[in-house]
Each structure stands twice: as structure tokens, then as C-alpha cells.
Length: 266
Image 1 (cartoon, rainbow, N blue to C red):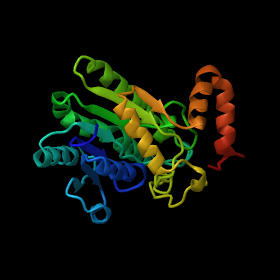
Image 2 (cartoon, one colour; image 1 turned 30 degrees about the vertical axis):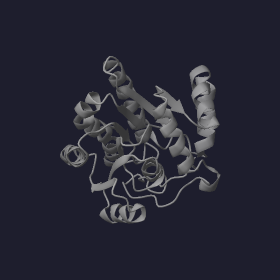
Image 3 (cartoon, helix red, strand yellow; image 1 turned 60 degrees about the vertical axis):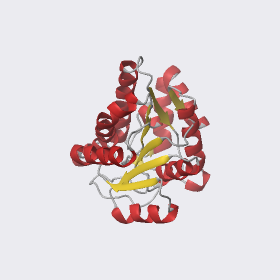
Image 4 (cartoon, rainbow, N blue to C red; image 1 turned 90 degrees about the vertical axis):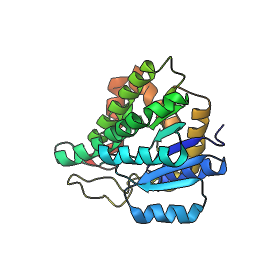
């Protein structure tokens, strides 16, 4: 399915995004990715060393930067078949402590970043009857304490994607959002603290989580099957189910998992 297809993966220098880039290249896709750090983009290009990879500097939260990125991809490859809105950041702070700047940064990358890229890629994707995918989160189904801004961004992303899917039903374009669950990635280490500083460490045991490569394979399979949405891990599926049918109990269990004695533990 992917051979010869032009696929954009935003935020492709780390974690799930990088795994997706690597997998797509092996499948013969023409891949464009972006990131904010030039040195990471150069390292990615060096590691993969394939003419089918285009790695460009872009801050998806900035509309002009995102528009330029999409235009450069179309100029380079001639079209866009698949857009995977993967770029994202998290946060870790109780709402009572967090700065509003942190909340806004998370929303600007996770929600507006996807909106910006999709807006300017839309015509080409419709023309090619392609796919628009977004990497969401269980936090988009169930609000998580200490990550209120992250949850807000993912709820917004899911609602917008659902509306977009409905608008595009008769175009041949598939729209799907994916909630991987806890996966090995850089997202927790790069999460913002209450004052927008990088956390620098993960509160979870990363070695026990699904690998980024495993997650990437599941994402590509979901796109290939043109699914509507997907939740991967058992814990993720359990959380979505519990929150739908036993919301009050899920409130207590979620609080117990993330908070102890009024302080975040995860």
C-alpha cells in the first residue's frame, strides 16, 4: 500500500514519529517529516540516508511555518497521499500550579499543529483520495490529572477529527485518530513542567511499555485498513471502557494511579 505514496509524518525525529519514518521508508514510501531541532533532523537524515526522505525544519504550532513545510513537500514530491499528525508535547503539573503559558504551548502544538498542517495539505489529500491521521491519546478519552492541558488538547483533536471525517465522507478520504496508550517515547521526558521547563525524565518505567516500533506497525496497519479510530493497549481499552460505563469509579481509580497525598506520583 505504501510503496510510491507520499507520506508526511510530523514530529519524526523521536519516538513513535521516528519509528513511523523508518518503517515507511522500508515499505518504499516517499516520506517527509519535520521537527524544530535542526541537529535532530540532520541526524535522522544521516541515519536513514535515503533519497526518499525529506526532513525539514518546522514548528507546526506556527501557521506560516506549517504552511511553508506543506508547500515544500508538494513542490518536492508533487503530491500528498497521507498525513500523519504526530507532533506533540505533554505536560506534568496540577492545574492549580501550572502557568497558562504551559497550557497554551501544549494546545498550540497538539491541536493547532494538526489543524495547520491538515488545512494546507487538504486539497492534495482530497485529490488523491488519501488519509488524514492523528496520533491522539487515552487522555483524549479520559481526562488525566496532572495533564489537564494535554487532555484538553487531545479531546479537542478527537472532536475536530470526528467533525472532519464527517465532512469528508463523500470524498474518498479516510480520517482516523489513534490512541496508542503508554508507549516508549520521548514525550514524557520532554513534557513541560508548571513553568514550561522540560521535565527531563519519565515518571514511568519505560522498559515495560510498548516499543515505538511496535506502535508504529499498529498505526500503519490501522491506516491501511482505513479504520475510524483505534486504541492499542489493553490498559488503554480498559480505561476507555471503564470511563464510559463506570465514570465515578474511574475517577477514583485514575486519581489513585496518578496522585498520592495531594501530589503527583506519575
